[in-house]
Amino acid sequence: MSLVKKFATVASGTLMSRALGFGREMLMAAALGTGPVADAFNAAFQFPNTFRRLFAEGAFNAAFVPLFAKEIETHGTDGAKRFSEEVFGVLFSALLALTIAMELAMPLIVRYLVAPGFAGIPGKFETTVRLATIMFPYLICMSLGAMMAGMLNSLRRYFAAAIAPAFLNIILISVLGYAWYRGADAHDVGFGLSWGVLAAGIVQLAIVWVAVRHAGISIGFRRPKMTPNVKRLLILALPAAITGGITQINQLIGTAIASAQNSAVSSLAYADRIYQLPLGVVGVAVAIVLLPELSRALKSGNLIEAANLQNRSVEFTLFMTLPAAAALWVMSEPIVRLVYERGAFAANHSTPIVASILAIFGLGLPAFVLIKAFTPGYFAREDTRTPMIFAAISVGVNVATALTLFPSMGAPGIAVASAVAGWVNALMLLGMLIRRGHWGRDIPLLKRIPRLVLSAVVMAVALYFAEYYLAARLGPGSPLVVKTATLLALVGGGAALYFITAFGTGGADFAMLRRNVKRGSKAAPPVTEQSPDP
Image 1 (tube, one colour):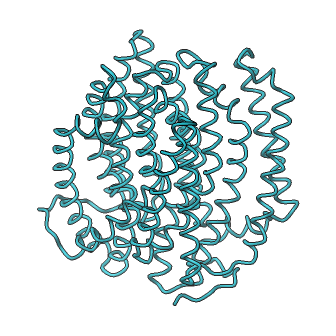
Image 2 (cartoon, one colour):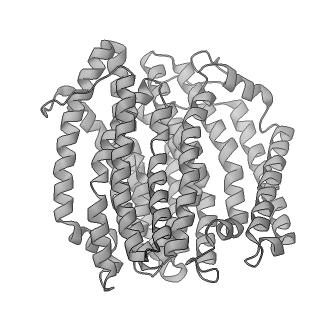
Image 3 (cartoon, helix red, strand yellow):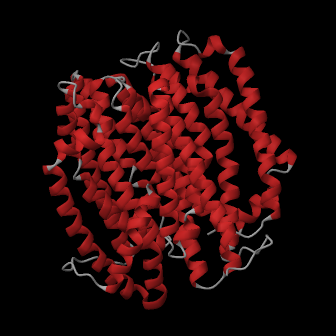
């Protein structure tokens, strides 16, 4: 299977999840708006979700996958099964202890870490604590599920792990639909969603567990023991967790700062959901597929293939994310108006703020996706320390910028800080890869990048004038059907203009697409001028 086809396999499952996520957020916006319950739920959910991405997705896709792939190569399925059981015993025991400790300390955690700004608001703080207490066990399910997803990705079985997250949105949409049918108030909706998150974690874990068994590996529970393999995993996992979850760390920091202002937390969450669509479809797919493929190439000593995989991934990333970033920057307000503006979501207050945040997130989108394309170049070589240092620097940049801008700009200032930190991190990762000789010079890629940027700029200018001309059809007084049809026409026209310009200027070509679609990664010939690994 070619690299692009693997990206497409993961992206299709992720796209389904993100599309359902849109539906979920639309219903949440209508039911809760940007009010106190929305703030409380989003802050409470951010906490276990951040832990999940730090210690589950980030750590295991970065540390577990290369070690699991090595076990398969050297000791076969039996060795991989033994290694998985050793890790499962330690991971489950650690997660159980962590969950108990966090549940007991939840009031202190919410007060001093998650949402310090809620402490002085009667009712809001207590609601956040209760919601976070209900949802935190979600971490156990999702962390164990992330381990099994890493196993499936290493075995080149991508779809089950990609489709499982969709069930979170399916369950939460069902909760919101039932709440609407019963006429539940905002308080009951918030608690219903929290129990739905916990139920979704159980369902997602069951899906990947069945898929792993179907792949021929049955995991049994072993007494926790610090074997050499487990020690190696932990040494790699801690910095990898920080690096892989840098976007989530910055979001958690942003949530804590935003809690000082009413509606800021939920405004950031609604904007985040929209920009997560291109980030998830492209960035997550690239990160999930590239790491095991790159690990295999390096383990087999095929440096030409490894460099080719990295370059083609960046090429694909920029080809897809640059137009998305331009569209989010130019069309953020019509998008927010169409997706959220109904029910409790106020047009005169909520829409402009969420739209401004979304536009800024759009400028950071290419950086966020490039980070996911660059970090496998370190992780596949079992270097998790260097990306962790860069991640720590970007967190410092994020905190300093957010604290500087938030008093004057509010929630959009936090979005600026996140985008700036993302670009700082991406450029440092690329610079070090080049310095070490792990990033070969690729003449076709270097020629295509400015042409892709030009194509995105041409599209953005055209969309700007088209949006101005069609303002009445996109405004708050326009019927939903008219707004939908107009926005879809703009998106379709913008995409057509981008592709025509990209192919016309040489930013993309059909030969490149055919090469990536038809040829498997192992068969891909070197198309770059490479520098050897030192």
